[in-house]
Length: 574
Image (cartoon, rainbow, N blue to C red; front, side):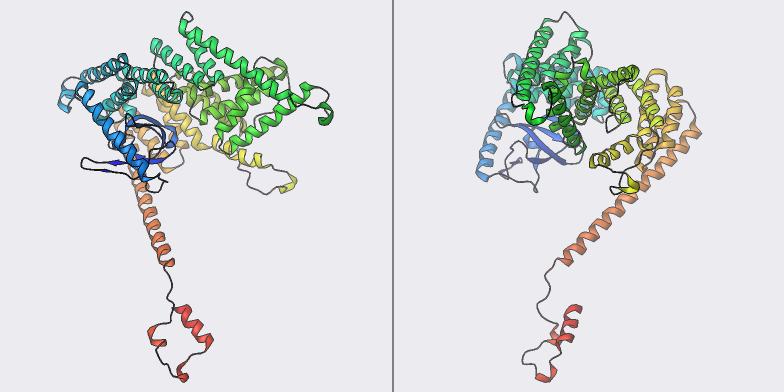
């Protein structure tokens, strides 16, 4: 449906998986998003944008249909539209009058604290709806509270996240919304809301609540291993927390049950005589190795969730088996990479830390193992980035330094595009695909990103003087124009803090030149695209069925008829 202030026109249905157009923030461009959940009774959606960003409780009035997407029947859309209009009005009548008025620009200038009072009042409305067990409306109100705070009080979401006193209530709003989703047994939605809460970097008791609710959401989805890891993290922070301990016990029972089922499936159809193996253990190891190889191919093709379905059960069954540590190393690596690609940063860090621990142990003990096909540097970079985004700043710094050491040890990496058998070397399809990951992980562009993260950490820990060498290194390594422009801008900002106005001006000028070049290139590319589209349109127009008027006339005398060859030439010219 497309809603306006004057009419309601049915143009499609908000089914899960449908493509729509929406804005991440009020003044940003409209972009494609996928519907994750839709509640016609309340008139809100959860949307997933490119890059994995999820926005919850989006009113349908703020969404447009993508005309290129498949739409459902008009009758279904009409029904949805009627429900939405009715419940939008009900929400406005019951909740709208309770919502606080957004502070004006003048109020924000006079009193910086007014924005914190604004979101606190908004959150109180959500709390009241929760007590009345109006969970859907509470979810919408909590999420609207964060959106309203950003829209009226900050230039962007990122700027809000750097404000500790705003970040805390925002994390609480998302956490409370997740609790409401759990009350509705909407576990997928609860997990997504907990992800949003984690981006606000909660601390202490707030963090424990988010981890508990995140674990409960994973339990509801049947993912005992993910729940266990989250709940263990919560238990480490508060060993006496009874709800955490109770949920952790449930998670362990779910894992044990899944392992028993996995063992039954693994051995139920084993015929040792036909397989040529001497023991069921040997058969199990062969089956695991084949499963790991299959999962890695899925990873290389971008099917991370499918890879996780294979590897996650293996991670649980191998974790306590010391004799199979080389297999566990491969599994932990693959699980960590897949979790990172799915934006599940905490689980990515946990699994990749297991990989690094096993890697060090097996190396020290002289036990043979196969290095993961994607290489160590990319795992270290993923851990660094995930730790940084999870506010584990010290861990992020250590991972970044280790990553740079890994890159130096690995040396330059080439993409293996040569045909199989080149110089007598057989190159598998997996090796060819993995080489692209290795090349990107060891590229100058990736190293520049690493130095920029180090600069931001150093600036936070020690100030601009500590950040300066990392910023210089980033400028040296930056590759693409956009990365170069950003590097120069960041270095200029550091020089500003150090009162080096001349150096700051030089790098600002360099950044300005690069930004102009980027704009020119984009304009040029757009013109070329428009020209190619025009040429394509002209080429696809139907050709004339006749020759030009001067060569084809009614009752042409026999002597004026041209030869077949000439006619063909003229037709071609036409």
